[in-house]
Image (tube, rainbow, N blue to C red; front, side):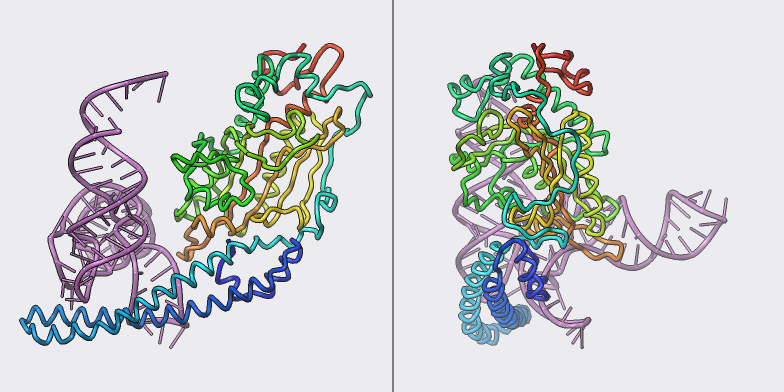
Length: 423
RNA sequence: GGAGAGUUGGCAGAGUGGUCGAUUGCGGCGGUCUUGAAAACCGUUGAGGCUAACACCUCCGGGGGUUCGAAUCCCUCACUCUCCGCCA
């Protein structure tokens, strides 16, 4: 959520910045400003009214104490008009305020100046690429055939137990997955991230605070009896740890990492893009989150991006880094880098990480603040990234490392798997 | 699931209808003393809104109500703790 003060002071700047996201904010911003000034006027009137009521109440208190009951009762009658006026003002104020809120939450975050214009994936800017994204042979099998061949992931079994998109990892497949999680967590810890194990379900407040609610696309699983939501990413519980908290400047940056299962309904998706491990309803992910000082958040974003792709280097996977264009940027993000690995049998780039700076957009609703050296309370910047999402890493590893003898495990994982080949 | 007790400022903990946005202690910050530190002493120390500033307004778990006036009374929801039951 953008800060009201910012909208008030720089409406035109916001409108022009949001054009990069292909969002026409002009009408919305003007309605917001109009409501805002109405609210401010009403608030002032209410303020004045309450002051008068408070004064009278104090006077009555004095009179009672002095035993002047008659005078006190006279004063009591005076409050009647004030109370009616107060009720009216309160009513109007609560109406306009909720109307304003409804409008403000419709405004996406303003993109960083470096974000390129563009409509979709084809306009994303490739900022870095490493490794060889070409197939070594025409006979490479896609991962969904390989996992069947070696019996390491069973999609049909998952369908039987639960439904499509809930695979069962078996034997060395399960071990490989566990190895990746341990490798990612250990690496993050070395990088200074504090590991946490968050709940996999969150309440409404948390889901609203990080922007998953309102859930217009129906992406979240909702346990209606208890009104809890299954997390679509560990970002939700981890970032919410800092909701309504005032940090010290010296505490920043705060670094957390967390492994969690992630649940997404992915309503409306179908076709070959969702084949095999490419898109699941339940998947594993290690997430990194930082709460940063506004002056350093972009430097930190670069570090997080580099950290995420250093994992891909260690796994010896060909990858590229994209700076998302305005059209592809999420509602809450100011700048996002996507990391994609090349899956050699599918001959496709697969997104395995998304590293974003939300600036104060998330912090504003979460009320994640810090006290600066001058003693002023300010909103912190929040950043997060996947490091990394498991299934597509699995897919790429399985496809790219296939040999006539079996699937070769990258060196760095062997101390975790205890084996070097799946055959 | 049943019964009971709670929820107050960074923490602990007073306050049961009228100068209470809140006594006090700890912690934090500033100072005196000291070569430096500790101790001691003095001062200061919640958040948000509005304002040039003062003033003023809001906030004592959330929401609603009673009253001229609510941290204090009533209703409701959430959470925490204790005991019992069940259980990985």
